[in-house]
Length: 350
Image (tube, rainbow, N blue to C red):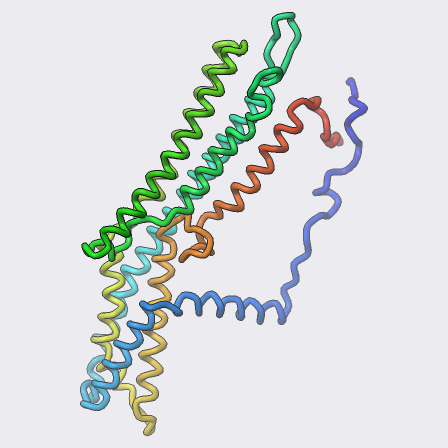
């Protein structure tokens, strides 16, 4: 069997024990709790939570001082109310999480199609007029701008994904028509930017055809660009359409309802001469818990949330994925002219 001197005979990094050791002691467990507390505080530090807590505390105090619910007969009603509230919120979380997973697949497919098409343009070879083999873009005007053309698609798609959407429930009010229209126009404009970048790459392929690219390869590159267009349309569908507005509205209003109608049950928790303190503690704790669940559901609404936006921690990390893809595309361009075995590590047979 012919050996290649360029291949190095050394073990792969995986066989050298390159896994980073992660400690899991008491200090790390405490720090995990601290981090969880920071995340939870971010979920309850909202205006929705402030309004809900105010209503719940006001209802509890009103029932306490008017002796409503003093016989403890409201316990069953509070249990039913809690179930009615938790069910729509958990359903919203499940729906939004499913959309987030589909959004991750769609964006990954878009990035993968862009990288694969660039790899074909940079790495494929064609026969020159004198019979010698050249890379597709070698000796053409596209040789210096090929990577920029495909990076333009990636950059435009990243800006589109970071655009705030115009589907908040407050846009049902006519007073927000201007803001809603402005966001819709910006989203539409950035969507057109992606289409323009894809069309530029189509023109690039046709230019390569003029420079001598055979018809079969031209057709294949066109089909690759069609895959990019289809993948981007899937991203658009997941970006621009939300979970049902009715479900979101019911979940949000139900949290406020609980603060009103559970007041008698909170007031019935008076004991040991504590006055309204214990009922208020229960009202505050449960209301914050329901609001936190609601914010989890709303935070997953935009699967491509921008940096600093609500839900960005659990959304698709578009910026980091694009940065890694951009670095890989530039590496593909740099290494396109190298031999196929350059940089490979020899496999050790058994």
